[in-house]
Length: 131
Image (cartoon, rainbow, N blue to C red):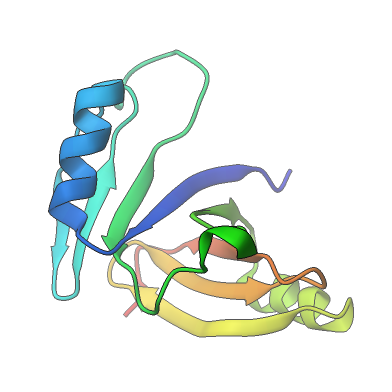
């Protein structure tokens, strides 16, 4: 089953966003990567049996939409068995590549797409050999 397994928050000021989400929800933000900086978002301890998912936070790569435009502030990522097969299905159904397939070294293959409505989402294929 292809389920949403991860979400991401883009922030103009990641440290300010971390402070906000810690104060509001009590989430933890371990720094998972230094270059580029990327923080995990632990909405519950990893061993928790509560329903829900964890995520990530990073520097916004482009200006945010104005308030009247709506936003795409949270990006969900779907775990898949075969990145290339699903990427082909996405493009065949009218989706477009937003950020090409890339390795999260030692963890997975990741990429981002835009659906037919202009929404960004990611796909993620776990692979400890990704580099």
